[in-house]
Image (cartoon, rainbow, N blue to C red; front, side, top):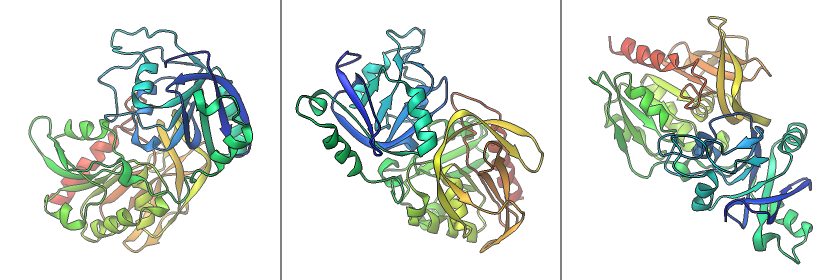
Length: 378
């Protein structure tokens, strides 16, 4: 089923309910309801593994206008648990489109809902916080099914806090993205939910990228003789990611140059002895202002995170690996958006410099990683 007039319900765990129309696959789905503010790039959002187990509410009213193509996916599948839009496009209008968005949602079995006021849903989540939710249509929302039954199903779903999900989205086997042109460096990229654009941007800078599973050990990384190690974005609670934190501690102890993005930033924070915490409703969109504290430059950045690092803005602070500092800070709410170690070669950012749909203000961070590896090999 594509876009229909069949009824569907979005039910939040606090009991708030919206009735709309089935969109994509019919049935039922459960997850954490979050909102994304980007007006473009919905294909990248849908295929980003970081959205695993999340029901994404799109604040932009018209979704599906450019269809789906075979080039812009950030992975080989759609990862969102459910999709909420106001006005789905009746037909795609773009020369690169190969299919309608609804077709791909059906193919991936993603249950969605349309025809509801996504602005109202977003305001509710901003005021009450991200929460568990469910979308129900078809037989799951048929005659004899009560709202109380649907709410009970939503409240039985596991929360995002405490969820260890990287292993569910990580590659099962290592693979290599060759450098474009001459190989200048080799990087071991630990896949916690990596986006396809990340190794491409590294490869464009002469980096041969060896993408390895999240379960990799320090012996696995050292067998590659890497010039650097990278930890990717990914889903879930960083407080539950015991293995990656331990692995990164071993990387830092060996002084291998390190770069982390998003989940990788949170893992670095925990490896440095800092805590992480769940944000009220997170940052998800492509218009978030972040300041580089070293230069005072403000970057417009892409975000997708519901957790953040608890680190003091008064720099520097001590860690088991020497001094570190908060390198970037979000200007909307003061959230830590980057870390830099002063005594070991390591840094990370909470936002996405690989933003495929833009903006591209932060692509220089890949050059910074290259410089870090160059300095370490001199």
